[in-house]
Image (cartoon, rainbow, N blue to C red; front, side, top):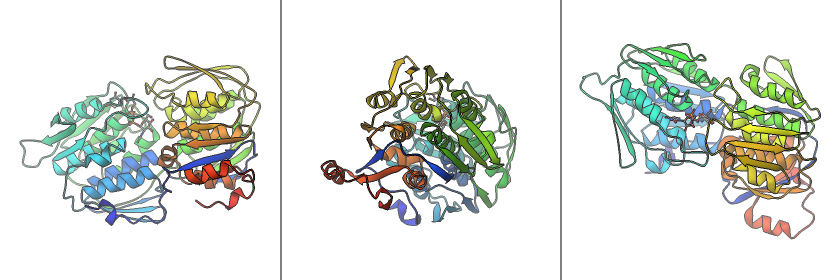
Length: 460
Ligand code: UD1
């Protein structure tokens, strides 16, 4: 079965596996960059569209590999999707399958978020366990325990989570009081979606407060769900029998915005970003100030980064409103060039320091001690061939490459394409010197010395 038949992408992300990104560092950046819709909101909201028996229109959906993959998973469940520009039309009227295919789920952990809405809508769902990933084990016990509290039977067999509502004719989940041992973003989203169609009231305590959770709650409310308390650590959902059609814009991507703020700081350049929600960036802006940069609100939806002399600082990643784990790698790239010693503690994921050896290849001085990275600032990085190990690690290497002396060549671009829409084009527009080249062409390029000219003519 060709799941992609019903999805029409007219601006999908470029295929990346066979390409490398070459960056000639130390160019000054200048100008305005447009921030795309939030990947993590869009993924959760696409899963949430399974709750809707009428038309869903999502606007400001970024063209990313992960979004395409989530589209394929929905297609496999019987959903019709059509993409026109940054709008995604979703029709989940006729779900004909409650089993998500392993080959798709194994590539995208967020596809596990389909479990809650599928179960709520169809009374049954089978989703393969997402498995481990490059940044840690990432179990799903909190999702499962919460659904069990809502009356679901859940069996995990042969790598598959089989959840169903037994007994009642209506096959509806029952509202419950759920305390999450950890404020997991994914578990909060799964349970909030499941609770929208459950009988009675669900209270999720120690819930995640991330803006993407709030965005999903806003989307569900726009379909008629009764949810309050999102954005705090207690979310209350009163189940309704069914939901209705919706037209909903996704929030701007705070992690992409944070990455461009760091791009300004690391290249000593002034950049303006919009649209953004400055409140979503409070911990990131606070750290940039500690590091010696200013972030000025131009208006309610635009920020300007004004660079300064980089100073060391300490960072601890935490659930929102703490410093986001997704910004840890980009900030580490920045702190490699700060004056003094910085300590970065990664507390959210157990294995998210894969960028450290790669940054060290570029002349950084970073030591790992448990979940801590101890960064001793150096005056300059030097371009080198490096390998991206996960999405945010790849962003860190791009940032380091922008600041480094000489040429940096980044492999493993499929990670980058999962989460940054048109990153090269956006950076080129700001004046960065970079290009994506096929690996074969890269070996040819190595043998010539005239590649630094006409970079902006490279198409993507
Ligand atoms: C989401 C984001 C990801 C971000 C992360 C933390 C999406 C698609 N991805 O991931 O970019 O880095 O939030 O902000 O939205 N955990 C458990 N049991 C569970 C669930 C999670 O132990 O049932 C643990 C995880 O292993 C991890 C921690 O909780 O150590 C945080 O995970 P979680 O908040 O669930 O992250 P995701 O939703 O996977």
